[in-house]
Length: 336
Ligand code: PBG
Image (cartoon, rainbow, N blue to C red; front, side, top):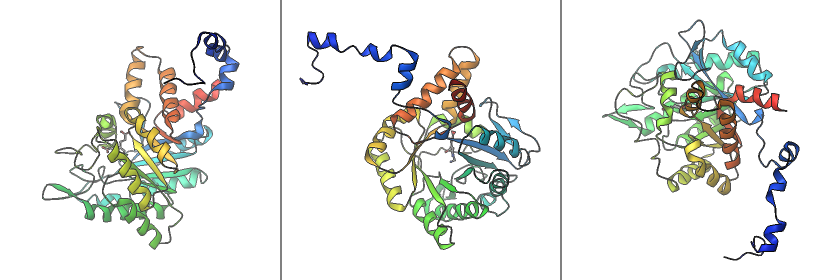
């Protein structure tokens, strides 16, 4: 097709020299179309009820499982780096078939939320609402006849969300990929006067190999089978859009695409189709790959991490959930 604007006729080609735009550092700074900032980030934090001091996660260098009492330092650092929000994951002292530690008032996440709010009331606290860290079988729901039962699971997810919100969570993030979970959570929260709690739905969450390091970190790998009967099948783009549409109809405040890097097309499409805030989860495997290559000097870790985070924002994410949040905030601070 011939276009007036981009006619590559000889004269025009001579006049249009795009390299002029890249001439100097200050020009590049002036013309950058995407600007990464620490305010784009949510930092995920693991809290372990069994620990008295922090333990580094072997497959995620630089990321720790924290004890409840050790959370303070981590939170102060997050605040000083001007990261506006954290996402809490809990490891309970005890697991059972129904994941009951997930919805007790004194569960690990509920205690952690109260602790964070005490240390930094201004920090936004989001929680992951799921059962897999709390069930002895490691699935994200209740098992009936060898399958994850949808509606019973949704009831438990609602109880988890209410208990997190009652502890003071600002945002609850249902991540179990059960049908109707957003609607049930909204209803349960509203019935208890928790109408100010936001729902950030893991809307298009794929059954991904990139969650590997997280499952080691959170000890949440399924003991049998896999999550493919509830998490999405990676080849499906249209179905992902349906998942997001449904969550919006059910009352989600923020929708999410997860993982980020292999699903940038969906971030782009969701940004174009919907006007809600859009989060992208730069998941554990995406972090660990860069860390591992960086440790071997195969890649420049800082450069690659910032390039990846920029690509997620450029694709259209307003919020990036990333284990790089603290490091990236430091790199960005030093660059400015
Ligand atoms: C819980 C949950 C998972 C992640 C976030 N919430 C694991 C899973 O679905 O198996 C993965 C996050 C990451 O890999 O960083 N359902």
